[in-house]
Image 1 (cartoon, rainbow, N blue to C red):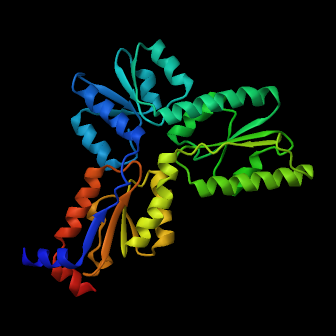
Image 2 (cartoon, rainbow, N blue to C red):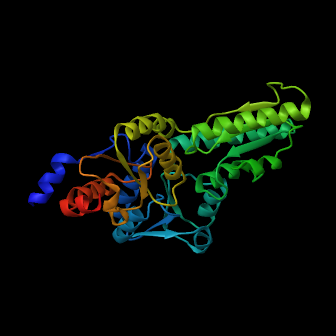
Image 3 (cartoon, helix red, strand yellow):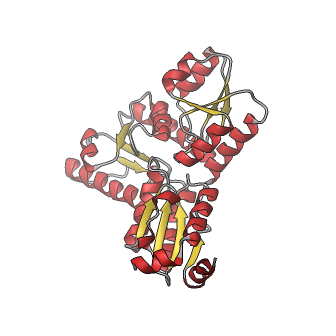
Length: 310
């Protein structure tokens, strides 16, 4: 106990107050928990959040995660749609199979789906293309491409730019959780390709829509400051989270002593010095209880293990 007091005196450990669940994820988890209190069984189409620790906690409460193939075999039951949203086909199947959908789609995602559908209808009339900056196969992207009869072009890396026909009009959107910097870099690349193809750039050729969620994009400058203010950053996130990977890179670019962990078991005492200021932060899919668990673990490290290794 004496050693713990010494560590706390020298090593200051704080959790970033802006980290943790975004509104959409928090809303979906609350809906799941409320429904499980009154239902015998609740299915969830895909992991409710890209965090294995939280998925495990909810599974122990009775949430059954299924994939799209399993959904087709279900009848007369309740299925939760997570914050990422779903394509129209999912709603159609639910009607056919008498499935009650507990729809926890994020309002920001639903609005984007509507914008993508409207833009697609316009592009179809004008022989244009809808391009989505996002990860192919990501749950949200599946919901977005579903609004375009799967005709949308999904772009993630430079090589994906070859899929676009630059002689035709382009309307660009982004997956809500992508990097703002990445979106604007992609926007510039598409503009340059259009200029190269046509010899000039006309605003009617290209319509770029920054559809990144502000709850996500605002975290980038907040995390930059947080990373600068601390000696060590422990970034807590599930490895499946694209938002987690993007935000971790924000920390890493500001602070070389930034470490990505899924939980406290991955923490190495060698990362710390007794006099360090340690900051704990996470993705929009990282639960606060998990960051608090990490904080408790760091505070419980023995003084000897810190001083011996540093």
